[in-house]
Length: 228
Image 1 (cartoon, rainbow, N blue to C red):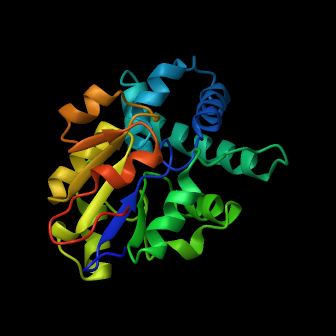
Image 2 (image 1 turned 180 degrees about the vertical axis):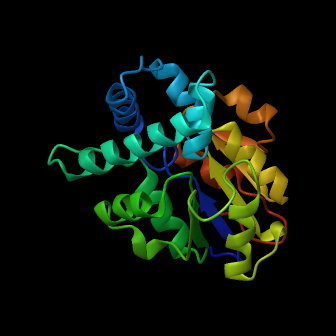
């Protein structure tokens, strides 16, 4: 059954749709090595995934000045671009992601992405998985304030002409949940990403799912049909 009114479902990318942590961590190590600095541990890197890149560096290396954060950010972007050119580059979709997108699109939901990735990186991921056509709005970290600021969701709503009551945000970090709550939209967390379920709930998730198969059961029903 389709929706009885237009709804927009916005997905985070890294940690929600795409399993990219191994690439992100490897590129972060390369960035620090390029500047002769000791690398942060993998757990620390996972904690900041989803934030704007400069803020990631500031959180990972608060002892360094802002100009060093800028240099580390540029080195990270160079490392990621180089990684993407290699034939063994691997950023797979999480299980059930493609089917969930297909199902939602078939039921008439509009789909979007809100990610801390740069637009170039997001385009590369979506092209690799042949998903670009699925999304009507793409919001990235290089087009304004990043998570948890509500700007990305506000732009998505402006582009689609929908209000907060008709938007659902799905993500794996507390930054996604806080962004959703700051924008006044429904927040659904996923437990297979980078922040634990209890942290997602504390940040404002209305529900947390352990697989995409659970998505229909937690969609809000205020005025529209469930995506069952």
